[in-house]
Amino acid sequence: MNFDIIDLPSENMSERGEAQISLIIAHCIGLDFMGSLRTLTKSSAAGGGGVSAHYFIPQISGQEIVKCHADMLPSLEFRYPEQVPVFRLVREKNQAWHAGASSWQYFNEQPGRAQNLNASTIGIEFHSPGYAKGDGSDLYFFENFSDEQIKTGCALIKEICQRWSLPLTRVLAHSDIAPLRKTDPGAYFPWEFLAAQGLGLWWESAETLPPLAGINRVSYVQERLNSLGYDCPQSDVLDEHTQKVITAFRLHFMQDSWRIDDKSDAVALNGVIDDALLLKLAGIKE
Ligand SMILES: [Zn+2]
Image (tube, rainbow, N blue to C red; front, side, top):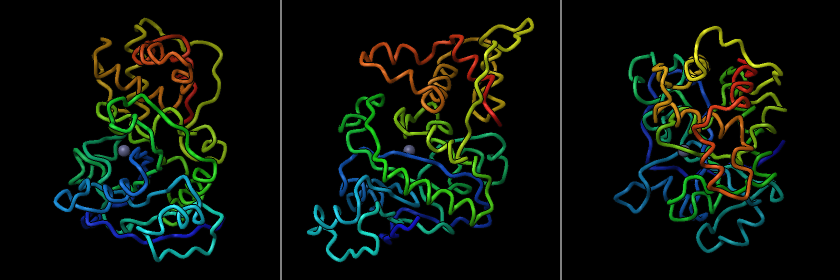
């Protein structure tokens, strides 16, 4: 697939050093188009967010960007105007400031990565204006992504995996690596569509509940989430931390938890351990 890459260098970056790229992290930013780009490219002192990602993928095509934002982005030229382009904000050889305090599996073991996976990850921001309800107050208010945006995103992810010899499964949500703080890219990010192309982790249907052999359901869930890679306590108690990790798992693998009209019910499902959760945990292919 052909798509344009537009360089818009961010001030918010640092050297990666010797760290090896191991994971690709999908994010979502819910500000308006220019506000998102400003947040991701300018320092806090310059009116930006002091954060970044390597790539920003808008919902709209090159053509529409020229039409809607020509006054602010005057010199953009597109070879593939019908396609959604990719804005490159930070070069892959450098660190983007996207992950924050985060962890996954054993990827924090190398020096300098105990608390933060920026050094070993590539961050991709998918634009979804309206996510988190504009003012950011409701982190469970999701908006759909555009089909063309997701196609461009998948093509970019495949190309990154090829370039760095990464297994295609090494794509995660920001909420997977920072479940206590983050909900992005949210319950409408189409992980199932990605999985159909081999991207990211997915599950095979399991029809019988896993044998719980003397351990309680909470212990099973905690052990399973931990072995997948989540930072989940092994306390045998459904504590707040565990509930947030269950929420992160549902955002990625059980998105039906949110696809109902009554949002209060959806949020109530967050920390619930039902049979559907056990079945799904048992069926994840690692
Ligand atoms: Zn994020």
